[in-house]
Amino acid sequence: MKNLIPKIVITVLIVFIILVAIYFTTLNKSSKNAEQNLQITYQTVNMVTNIRFGISEFDSADPYITQNREMIYIDSLIFEPLLSISQDYNLTGCLAKEWSKVDSKSYVIKLKENVKWSNGENFTATNVKNSIETIQKNKTSIYYENVKNIKTIEVIDTNTIRINLNKEIPFFEYNLIFPIVLTNKENIIGTGKYKISSIGEKKIELTKNETWHEIENENPNIKTITINLYKTMGEVYNAFKLGSIDFLHTTNSNVEEYIGTMGYGKVKYPNREYDYLALNCKDTILKNTEVRKAISLVIDVEKIANSILENKAYKAYFPLQSNSYLLKDVSISDYTNAEEAKKILEDNRLEI
Figure 1 (cartoon, one colour):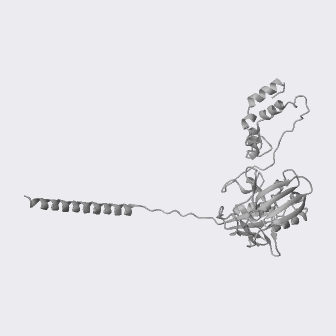
Figure 2 (cartoon, one colour):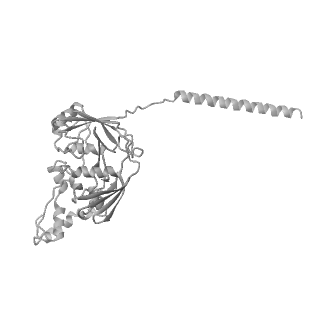
Figure 3 (cartoon, one colour):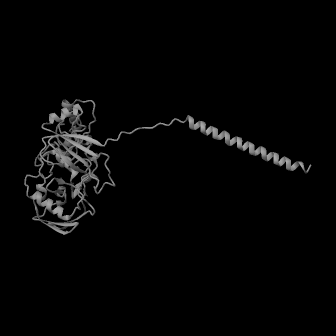
């Protein structure tokens, strides 16, 4: 009996090993079958690396010379200002990292380090001084008003500049949004995300600026931009319909009459123009603030925008854009109570 016990233990152990082997063999076969039955799909994404744009009445790519609105927008891709205005209309740094008002007529500006022009040269305070002086010599420049009251420019060091005005200008910082340009004998150079690679009679070629100081934070997928030049806006519309360009910008509210309504995407955005009703604040009744507020409330602005203006206008409560940082503490509900407005008008015996 004692001799049988070891034999039984060995037999049980062998059976256990065989069962384990069968289990893992079956598991491996199941896994292989699952892998064979697994359907793998791939999705191909076509990355757009070039876009074609169309403008009419091209005059110059130099931001200090051009009067072409579309070219001014395009130049913002090539040239950068000291300060820029954010989407909520606040002032933010671009080529400048710090700015301060020393006194009523003096400002000190610290520039960002390690900024390069698109040709590889270092960006310095002297470049800013030269740009300001270039604009001051051209009274027809759209940026002349920004710099006409600058009396002197002092280069303190490579990255610091002091601007002295001939008189106090309230909120002068908002004038520092003009582009900074480096001009050489061959072409004009900027520090922006794109650079001019060629300018011809029929088109301008822009390529991505690989030395752009913000490329690590915002690396554009578009490598090249082709700007086709046309004599008239009608030619631009025709080129868009024929597929010769991918994108156009227009302020024409009746653009559908020229390009149709199908086969393209459209983005609308408000500009800074607005219509308003001016009231005589010296009038016996209209001098009352509540009355004027009531009149503004009972005017159906939304109906005017949708029906009369064919949904081509936005409703506004103030002369400022609704996303302005200056309106962050303003409650729109204070300006939308039409029932309260009607009562005020009735109390003042004004017909609605």
